[in-house]
Length: 220
Figure 1: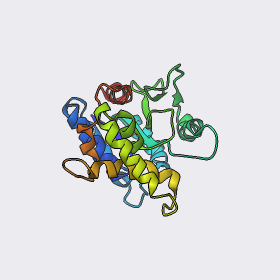
Figure 2 (figure 1 turned 180 degrees about the horizontal axis):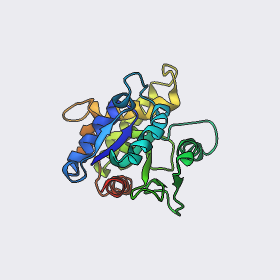
Figure 3 (figure 1 turned 180 degrees about the vertical axis):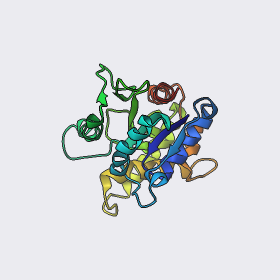
Figure 4 (figure 1 turned 45 degrees about the horizontal axis):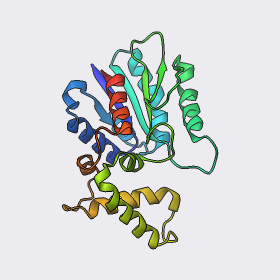
């Protein structure tokens, strides 16, 4: 039976596939990681495009074509209050009419689930980086970074800060990406492949373990 994990962009897809291989979960969970364009060639690779696929995905559950569904999107940054609630509201607006409702829980660190009593498996939702803070996949990498990389990364942060922010189209959203990719490009083996960060982050870090737990819980 097919298990779909929908992410925003091809870069997210490649990173998650690498994470599954890194943790040896690729064969165990057998997840099909896809972007909106894998379902619809004219779709955008954005968070809103992922949300727009939710009714289609729920229909696949109804017809028995898939057994498990998860979505992974960026929390993003905003000048408004409580972006987490905004994201969950948009998801609820698409899933509630189909009978899926958010599971009540005390701790959001392990992700979110939308349940429908007609189906065995809830739809899992992960808001990068950690279901609480603003940010992206790159923010998750920064949070999970191993302690022996911290000194180097601080130097990178100071360097990026020294350049100023006027040249960034959107400084708030660009900073974490600039820091992470500069950090990767100044390693012993320079790279711009974000999946290589998996060799430089701490697998025992709570944000890492929580994400792994969400994948296993959603797709096992």
